[in-house]
Every structure is written in C-alpha cells, then in structure tokens.
Length: 264
Ligand code: 5RP
Picture 1 (cartoon, rainbow, N blue to C red):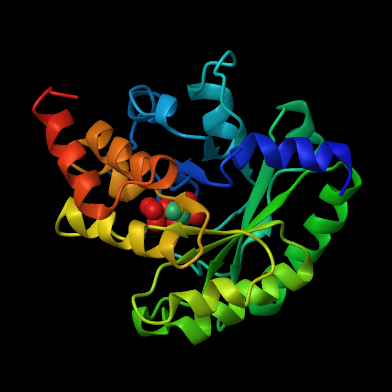
Picture 2: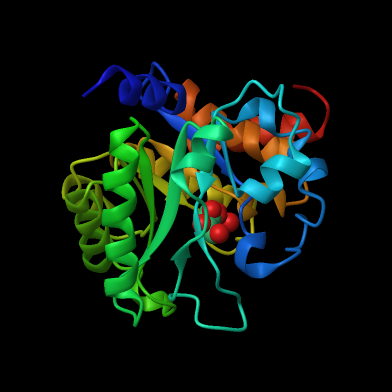
C-alpha cells in the first residue's frame, strides 16, 4: 500500500485499530432530516468525539468550519430521493472536487438485490479505479434492499464481500444479531456498523455496538442513533468508550447516565 493511502487510512482508523465515524449525510436523499435540519448545530457538540465526519460536499462547504481538525469522508453518490428509486444512484461529486476539498476518503452506496445492483457496483468499480490513482480510500455503504428481513448475515456477508472484491478499502454494513461474525470473517477489509433507524432505548445501541466489536467490526458509522436521541453527547461518549476504551455495554450505559446527570 502506498504512503498516501496509508496516511489517509490512518487518519480514519486510529492507532488502536478502531474507528468512530459520524455520518451526517442523510439529507442527500431525505432532505432536511429530523435533528439534521441545521447540520452545523447537530455537529457542534459531537464532532470532538468522532474520528471522522461523513457528509456531502454541500454540507461541508456551507456548514463546517474549514479549521475543524477532523478527517472528512465525502459521500459522492446520490441524485436520488426518498420519493423516487433509492437504488438508482449516480456519482455526483468528482475526485478532483474531493481533492480540492481535502477529504480523506469517499463513500458511496451499493445496493445488492435491487434494480440498482449492477449500476451501483459498476459505479463502485469506477470510483475505486479513480480514487486509487490518488491514494484515496473508498468506503462502500452497503445495503441489501429495503426489506428488513434481508439484514441477515448471509445477505450482509454477500454485499460486504462483493464490495471488498471490487476494491472498497472499508465496508459499512448493518449489524445483525445472528452470525454477525460471518459478515466480518468473510470480508477482507475493515467493517464498520451503521445504526439504521432509531432504537427504543440507548442501551440497545450500546449492546449492538459492543457485540459487533466483539465479533470483529472495527467500529461504527453511526448517525441517527446518536444525533436523533434525547442526549446525543451522552450517546456518542458511551459509544466512544466501547470502541476506544474497552467498555462493555453496561459500563457504556453507566457512563451515558453519568454524562446526562452532569457527573462525567
Ligand atoms: C445513509 C447513510 C448513513 O451514513 C448510514 O446509514 C449511517 O447512518 P445511520 O446510523 O443513521 O443509519 O449512508 O445516508
């Protein structure tokens, strides 16, 4: 691996081999998402606890202080909306623009098991070809169609492996309770977990993050289960403690409650 690629990956994945990415890219297809109406306000109390921010160029340019000391993962796929066909994405930001904006990595969605399967995987292959020329890592944001029942290990493993085979340097996948280790073991590049829709309790988030890390994920790319919660700072601090400080889910939940009570 060349120096530039290694350097960018080391900005994202910390010395302990773990990572906490904070995605605030949801507006690219959802519009003004709840709690993300003003991204700069959402990010302000949280960015210091994240290892990298994932967002689009529009939010980067308009809402983020250029002096922020955090690496950026730029989402470069889109041109779809919640009222259209989500799987029919195109690449909407050039690699030249990624370099101009000094992003450390790019991300794009792949949709296996949908009408957009071939298009998104072809987009991934072209993006990897171009980004590798400049030492820029590509994170594949994997998905297996809209049906929740497809969030099973065998489908998640399928799309994670395909993305890595095409050349993604990092894969984002959903967590699944059963056999998550098969998703990790079948993927030759680091895996981060996404949160999906908000959970009932914060403890559930700590439980799945802890379990995912035990089973080999290097961290998370977690959005709504942080910034759509009642206590976003307490939530991200609990998650960070699991990822970087070896806390279990109960210890993270205790920290969460202490932060809320102003005791930590
Ligand atoms: C959708 C994304 C998000 O970055 C990813 O799904 C993680 O966010 P969440 O934890 O809210 O699911 O790619 O835009």
